Image (tube, rainbow, N blue to C red; front, side, top):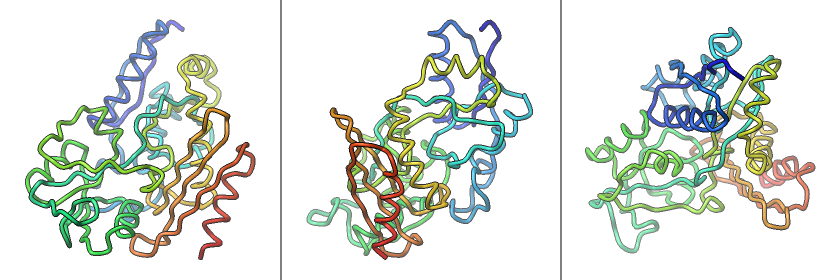
Length: 300
């Protein structure tokens, strides 16, 4: 492929890291690319939590529109931000390696209290705009106070540094990819089997037009099928629940050395209602997502 590939991306530091990572992988295959920065609805609306923004795909729709209109050749998305169904004419062609899928709790030293779960003081003010994180955090610590937190990763950390929160919840993947210096804070690294992350958290998805076979063939060369095998199950659970990234649902899948699948899921009806949990294992992915959803629903 001789043409320069146009990669659509958001303009945040993490989105640009993902796009530049994509460029590097393509360059290894002898293909040059350029970045096309596109502002999305989620970037423009900074005063609302995610569950109050109407519609789905508010971090992807404008980029997908540009792809459909031929303004870009491919898109690099945080896979956890993507609706489970691509618009007609588009497809997720390939996925990246998976960075640490866990959530981390970042605590100001002044808010540390020995003897409390996570070392976090009583009735601490915790920042997150994710309904999933809110629900699970309250499930562990019903005494905490929650406050919405928006902005890109460095902005959120800076708000914590300024003392606007006692602690904040963020994805480990973004913090690690941006090599954020968190040495001044206390860090609680959650186990994704216990504090269950968003489906496909830590993965970059590469989206193309369905009929763009040259670009699709190129991306298959940098595809990680072992990651797709588990994220397909996680996203199938989300799809069967008919939820978007604002749904308080966590789904995490691992595959062991023998090829068996292990799934952990956590769901609440709303961010301030009890969390239901399910754990299933199977030697096959066949109807595994359906079984997880059934287990969650039967816990009502």
